[in-house]
Amino acid sequence: MKKRLLSVAAAAFFGMALNAQQIKFEEYDLPNGLHVILHQDNSAPVVTTGVMYHVGAKDEVKGRTGFAHFFEHLLFEGTPNIKRGDWFKIVSSNGGQNNANTTNDRTYYYETFPSNNEQLGLWMEAERMRHAVINQVGVDTQREVVKEEKRLRMDNQPYGNLFTTIQKNLFTNHPYNWPTIGSMEDLNSAKLEEFQAFYKKYYVPNNATLVVAGDIKPEETKKWIETYYGSIPKGTVYPKDFPKDAPITQEKEVTATDPNIQLPAYIFAYRTPGNKEKDAYVLDMLSSYLSNGKSSVLYKKLVDQDKKALQVAAFNQGLEDYSIFAFFAIPMGQTTKQALQSDIDAEIKKLQTTLISEDDYQKLQNQYENQFVNANSSIQGIAASLATNHVLMGNTNLINKEIDIYRGITRQDLQNAAKKYLNSNQRIIINYVPEKK
Image (cartoon, rainbow, N blue to C red):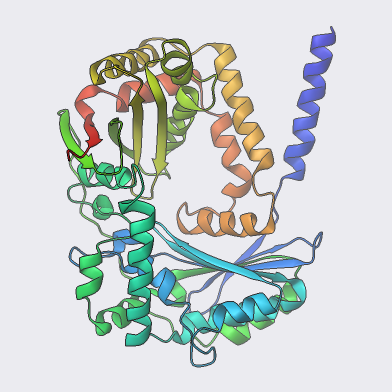
């Protein structure tokens, strides 16, 4: 009886937490196509203004990769009304913080200010959208910044080019083939006019979503939005008709070298559905079952019990058009690749032939409930989630409803996904080994 009472209490707690988690928002479009999302939360005197552009590395062309990420840096150079070098000074001197980030699918810029500076954040992002200054001085400066970032994060970092190697081998036609940071050779050879053309093509209001979240007065915010953004000219939004990759039907094995590592890593990578598909959620849950935490299946077996692996993971990288599901393992001692592969394949086989236990299934559900309760704990995080759900998922309200998708995943769904996507003839094996000296 005591255990039953505890279960009821736990359910009640989660019920209250989930109700409190509901994020209220309003969304509408300006005549120029800019999508606006407003979220009012007056519990703390802060406001985040974010703009997400539906342009990422996949929108580039071969020979001119790295543009989307480059613009993440370039568009802090200034505008006719913000002097070069003043962007960060304006933000910090007004008690704010700002940043930007780029993926294969989108680019996101944001400022978080005390709420008495909400208008400043709106003005700055409108300046960026309306008439960012793109000149040779800025291009030359940011080229060096990006080169240093690539050296620091990838070229001189152990396993720094591993994900790039996965992309290059999983995708042959689709532009997920190259990394977000792109090629330094491409950036070096690009002319100023090409950067200016990229800005005119993608940094238009009807290719953008503006989110304002926090301590706002919605009617006042709407007036400022109309003042700053309403007269920005509409652009042409081009269809995202990217070449598709044929299904992988035969196992392929490749070898890549890294001068910064001493231990090899072995990757077993699968191309899976884009993140709007239900199966992408199922595969995400499968990856958690396999390697989320020290009690997960792969960690317990390969690291804890058998001590065959120094590290092991299964991860699901959700992207807009496709996703990537991959196993990653670094061997311990004299463990061979074949030994790791056999054990990983054995766990895949179990998933394909036997339903996971009710206890393991409930543990998974509890993990996702907990993640949901803890997600969006800051205004900055809520703003990013609202923008992402609209731009990449086509449904802003997933910020409230995504948990229902995970709740609806059954043990049979997990088994079916393993049977459908995790077969040996559907994968690329990558031997990521130390470079011989």
